[in-house]
Length: 275
Image (tube, rainbow, N blue to C red; front, side):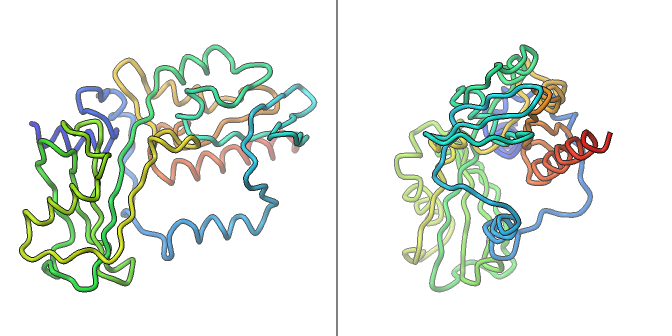
């Protein structure tokens, strides 16, 4: 029970399994196909899409002002006017209210934002000069009662070098793993394998502290429901839409949910202008 709870809690919510809504899990549809890794990483996909539009970097948005005639987006001292706004910030950003909406978000949207949760599944990536684990050992599930690590994946085929990725869930760790998650991961590897060499490179994620994410993905906790994500899929106003994985209950927490929600928003705008 502890093992399954930790795997479920880390994989589905990034939180403690005791906070998972069974109704919320039931809303999730099983997708066809398999999990895949984008060759070259997601940066390749993002850069390809960025070639098609004008992107303003280093310009955090503070205000979205909207009316029947259009929207004005405020970023620093710059105001950009447009016919529509599709707001794709993560649920964590919506929850802290760092972007002001004028008029403010409808009451049903605010209620849905408050009921849903944004938690964190973090990663530690170790790259080595030489492989020290078996060729057919591609994934390890850990029954770890202290440090919050739950999986180790072999990503060598994707990186081109011997690479292990440790997934850990800070919410279930009983000691402060985040102080030095890399050192904890190294100690776990040392317990499982003999003669573990020092890693060539180390990288860690920090989604929980990133002000533009404040977590890695959304989930439906006890007290929330798939209906809350359906509410967030509704227009905020006549010219403002929300998009992101937290607005797509069939596949929340996934890249396909984010992608499909953006496609849905584009369709809404196209249909409006076609009518």
